[in-house]
Image 1: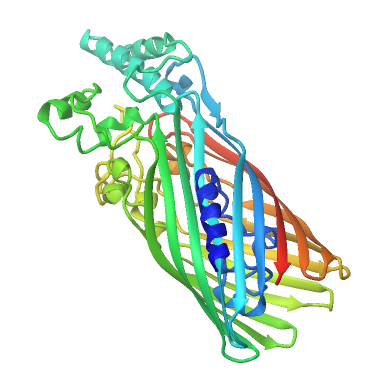
Image 2: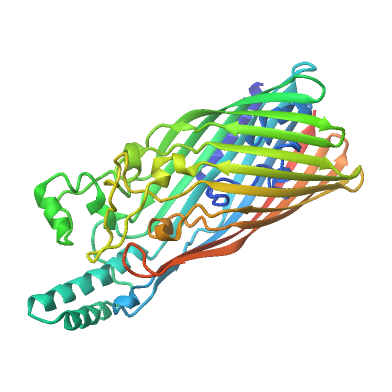
Length: 484
């Protein structure tokens, strides 16, 4: 056990800074290479000690084993805003620069007796990362500000609305590409969210056919944001004095600035939840499974208490899953899973974002300033995920896997502005993998995943101009398993 915890600590030290998932929302499609090879359809088909991430009851079927894995994850993210509709001379678009993430995982299972198995699964639950060298918000704000200045100036001089519109467009067109507002904290734009879960697991065989399991979920997460200075007027601090509120009302910059919005380095948060599960062989060739994970209640990100709702709250959403696996032939297993992730129950994720107004982005009715309980958020909705996985045991040395999965995008098209930071658009995924067994107690595993390119767009974003976000992904994972 001492050696086990040394491994756990080592994995923890390396996994958290590198997580970059954004697949089913921001959860991973599968945890461990055997799971990913089957598109994550393992609720009723446990194969390794990472199954604590899907169904802790599956530990009863594992025996004494340990699994080590390393995933290379490559998300390709792009975003744009188009101020040319205001007369601007350029499209503000950018591809996120960081495109490779290494993500280790670890699992261990050990039977205590013929009924009880204990162990642990350690895995990156998910995360989001975008890094834009060109600040899409700031360059668009510079064009929008020039338009407003030209428009209002022409109106004040007695011009007609049509003449004022033309003057605004002329002013917007004079802004050179690459020009920003010059406001503080409007340089490099991006966010970095990483979530690690340590799941000590206990499973209990009720009978030869049925098992139950429980896994406390220890969540640890890190977050950093940069380049969000254009949203200072949405903070509580910037609205704390009459002079600052007046400056914001006239599209100026607040006289009092929040230091809990952006550019505060990496902040950390921890919390607890629980996952329970059941696994039952209801027919000789048919196994069913079900699991449910509570929300993981996390500490607040204090350094970003005026960015996320509830003073920096960012809980990990609850989710439920059911699955079935059919041993169609002695060699072929077919698995089907359904999962629902309740993003809508986490205010900082699901609260409505800003909306368009003639003066630029504004707070919609019923919403509040950033950091308040009803503060602006990303507008994410609950999603449903369906996974189909196949496992074919060719012989004693080779096993092959494949899968396909579909999930709804959590992002409504009306919420594109803030989701430039979190373009979790992919819906369709395909996977493939294999296991090579050179010795009876050892497996070498490989899996590949591709998430197809998905774009979401809106004719009018909260900046009052068209916008679009998109992402596609590739991922490969190697792991090694030992039966002890």
